[in-house]
View (cartoon, rainbow, N blue to C red):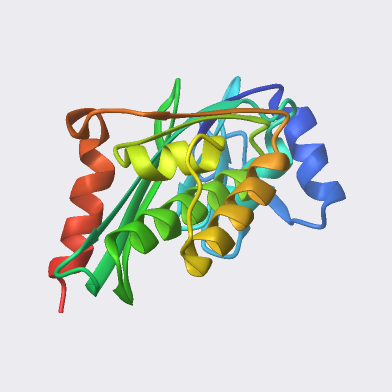
Length: 197
């Protein structure tokens, strides 16, 4: 649940300029409320809290500076190739901003890792972050994205191009390999999605 500390009246004006209807708050503490799709922004004294399953549209309108986020990604599969799933997490100083996990059909482990990386980068882009620090426990994928390793696999080459295009949209980015225990939430989300029938 994103929390944005801001001038709530200026935030209200930005939402209204974007064509979003802003209504009175439901309690004495709420200054105003605004909804779009599956998200609702609630303004308090000096912050806006965004609730719902798709907060990125409202959040991107309210974030003035884009901000920095830490992105975690992981892929999982049973067999190689086999049934596969992805997991990803976006974290800021406010905690977990967004996370996701889903089955992606049949894939190799490396294909699943790339799909997870693409999903988290697309979400971070949609949220409007301008700086991302990406972390994953696949040394191969990290080194391929950084250009330290090449690949002969056409599918992985194509996915790497997609990742590099997504990264180019950010003002600053880094990608690093981390141990699995640091990537445990993304790993859990991928495995939970894989276990779902």
